Image 1 (cartoon, rainbow, N blue to C red):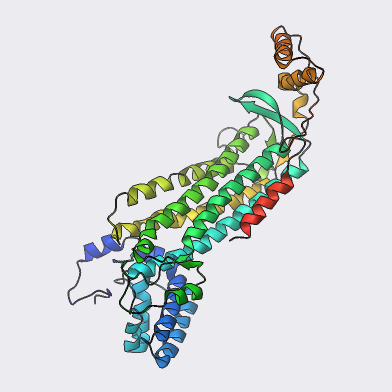
Image 2 (cartoon, rainbow, N blue to C red):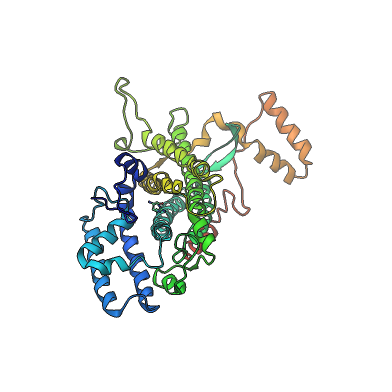
Amino acid sequence: MAKQLWNKGFEPDVEIESYTVGRDRELDLRLARYDVEGSMAHIRMLNKIGLLSDDELSLLLPALEDIAGEIVRGEFVIEDGVEDVHSQVELLLTSRLGDIGKKIHSGRSRNDQVLADLKLFFRDELRRIAEAVDVLFKRLLKLSEENRDKLMPGYTHLQVAMPSSFGLWFGAYAEALTDDMQMVLAAYRITNQNPLGSAAGYGSSFPLDREMTTELLGFDRPHYNVVAAQMSRGKTERAIAAAIAAVASTLGHLAHDVCMWMCGNFGFVSFPDKLTTGSSIMPHKKNPDVFEIMRGKCNRLQSIPNELALLTANLPLGYNRDLQLMKDILFPATGELVESLRMADYMLGQIRVKADILESPVYDTIFTVEDVNRLVLNGVPFRDAYKAVGMSVQDGTYRPTREVNHTHLGSIGNLANEAIAAKMSELMSEM
Ligand code: ARG
């Protein structure tokens, strides 16, 4: 028996059904609790504007509570022949309560219903991302503090350049995450607006109280213009994808650094054996597979803004079914990012950092700028000092002083980690 909400007496073609439903039956399960939450707010509002009686509301609300319980206990399924979560919830209500169940869809369309579900879902996912970013951020800042005096080489063009430090390196990724958090917060703000009441995308002739559902669902404000609300499907996802890509680019970069610093030729960092992986043929190998998988996953996550941009390019205004496919792209992405953030935190909790790296003569020339600056402080014009040190490197007589004295804001000797921490907590407090 056909179970489509829109069924008008003919059986839809089975092939067509399965092609258009796609992965919705599986993916929509993640929206189920939000769908019920949205329906509860919607029917409270219908009651307030006189479209549902108090008696009807008092039957519908507990029935929705029951469904919410089934969702939490993992008993809720989207049955074969049912298109999506929205249809399943309505069908359950109708089968349990009879005709009253059919009343909840007044003044609503699946278009604004799915939008509301997605916004509630992504709002939680963005919070989950923000929390995982914050945990890693704190780990990095702690490592920066603990290793503030351990020098390491800084590179440009992947050639030995100037002294750096583990304090600077860990702290750099911490601060980069604060920039990414701005993107997460922007995506959160765009997401946290109420689309309910936009219905199919053009509103309704019922006097829907959109302020009421906004408040009940904890949105910052309504997405006022009903067409803009509908247009936000796609725009919201692209903002979230940009935020995910920003975090992924920082994390992928960090993962690459670790892979490189773990290479025996550098040997700057290492991990307990059980955190490394082996080779089936080379008995000596301790490989950084974790960070390679992390780098690969983060690179893939950075392709999502492009995928969404192509999927949604030049769509006509209003709902188009293409939009459904964004779920396939974005739903797995949030979890993958969180998983990698947590793995980075887990690994960095056990990182070992090599001491006295710059004592090796390999890095002698890393101190040239320090020595040039020392001459400048003694009154030699910069270009003459540069030339003198340069000539001594050239003829093999250069001997480094090995003294590093960086004091300005944000440098080796003045990491500004407190200011960086304050930036992050300010951002976190807004989510
Ligand atoms: N599964 C659909 C989606 O994700 C739900 C909305 C269906 N609306 C419609 N007009 N066919 O977009």
